[in-house]
Length: 98
Image (cartoon, rainbow, N blue to C red; front, side, top):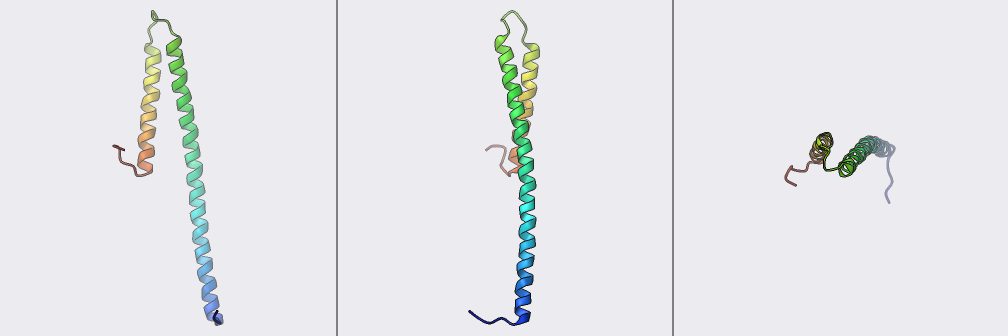
């Protein structure tokens, strides 16, 4: 253990305060990203529920009835899901092939 001068102690305190402010900013950034990802997860769950509902409706339709409206709805949900997957890959820096 060594003895610090008051100037050295002031510098140490200044460094610790600066590091503390940096850590607080990083925690705030993580909290914002966490909230953003939670919203995306909720949206993804809703899209999955929509897709399952459309599939369920398609299975319940008789063979004689056209499934055009159901297929269009399913196609829209699937396209949206593919776009979200690509957006997620880009935000995490994952290549399209992975």
